[in-house]
Length: 381
Image 1: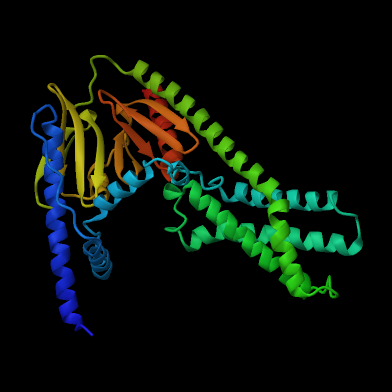
Image 2 (image 1 turned 90 degrees about the vertical axis):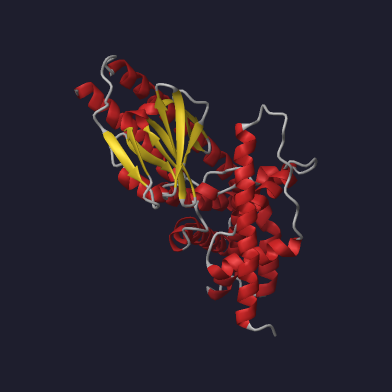
């Protein structure tokens, strides 16, 4: 056994080297972006053995920090997904709406799912007393499982069921787990109620697991189509309304009136400060404990990196026109030129840039309402 103190020292040294390599890579990446027209190119950093990154991950987990090799692994993952024949895996990584983002609607969805299965079972089997009881028990079990999984689990495990990171693959795996749970709890409920005493529990269980894909396939397909179409329709409708409101805000702006009175001074964790007009601020992008401010001046677009997390940045930019639209972005509503909507959420086009700022599903409603509120303020001014 290696002493705990020695192992901690080794892990700390390896993580320190990883931090240094990550910082070097970041500096070289910035240099490469700023000198992309130059004949010089940054050489790729030497690769490390797999065990090196395993130690980094384990060490960061032990220390409770973000491991420095995260960017390398993200690039590696992206490279693998772009290889030929990896399109199915890429589809599994695509964003997917976490059901209907509303407990009442999700409850109705669970009820509808159970009713579809009940109608399907009654339509393709003879109407008998025992069969009717069995079907009703199955419907109740389906509703309880779906309600507990779709509504209950996200409240207990919010990080695992974060709507921002919900993908097609997670949706498929989650749906499979729900049906396996229904396939187990259904026979248990039937045997507990004594509905089919002449049939063994194992026979009922096997029958459930064999017939579940047939009975549940139709409802799964209908729910998947419903989720995609409902989210797409809602987001497109909100995007159109938001764009009309943005046009109205721009019409009501006085040409000679620029709100230069609202100046703000941002102070970083290292006591570095930056002073600017809030009306010139476009958006803020955060990465860990660093935030990059983008603003417009007479010479064009400027940016500044400060050591400050987005939560403290949001507190210092306390203004009705500034809204946090994502866990990594803050945007100035007055800098938005267009809102685009799809099944996964919204994208914001920012003035005088080619940047599209993402809007998280949790913040989508707040951003749309903020745009409408500012339009109402402009009309009443």
